Image (cartoon, rainbow, N blue to C red; front, top):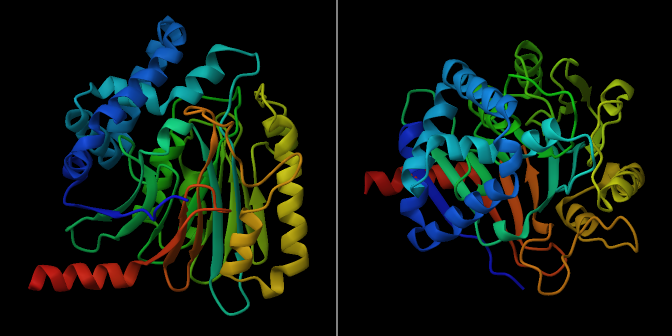
Length: 373
């Protein structure tokens, strides 16, 4: 059983918050460098291709022009962990680089995500983070506090060495966003999903504002988003580049795993070579069935039970082979209550790990009181 995660508070400008990650966990700096450099080594032949170099340079220029905060935070990460900015950005684009460089199935990470409008108000936004095993020790909770007037506070699940809402997050308006990985051939210059998620939490107060933001900007393509807000509105978004994002808004429930449901999006998919191609529809079916049966009575405990479930095929709670340090597994499960801006999280497989909860308004109050003292 894993211990509950501690909270890292990052304060100041985007550049400063990026730099503070390394300062907050100095003992883990070598592990962060090893994870990033190891990931880059695994795709080095693809990074050496001229078209990849051109694309990554275009993405860097796009980021600087369209998302200065994301640019600065990633630059702060690079300086803090002793890496070049180009190395950090290439690492964040690793899945896209793989998609663009091969038409063959590749190893994939997977996640299971859903959101449900609650009769009592607000929504539950839920995700199992199925990701590379070396990120288990790098997984952290981040409280982002920007002193700028009117800036929203963000509570995010992510990894040391990665920006903002690298896996999920909720803001002080009650908007929560989670994602899943889906490979596609439809990539181009635009918002990388990790920077997009952080920008949505930074700029938007509710689902409708987030959907308007997404529809108005070019996207790099790949993956899906699931969102919910304090009013109980939920939505899912399937992201492409040439193909416009597919936006589904709901006052009931939405769910996504690791495949596109839109036929045009699905035609561009790059399938995984492992069992995710089989388990993704099975996991989605399990979630949809459970929500259909229990949606009107759903609560946090029931959501935790669903995300802890195991099946012979298509287990929602994913365990790695014994002794494996790199194989994808469920690193955490998170349940956001948007009305109260509360995060419930397991550090490790939800079936056997300690669950903790963090209330964003209480964190903000405690921080303000600490500053006053």
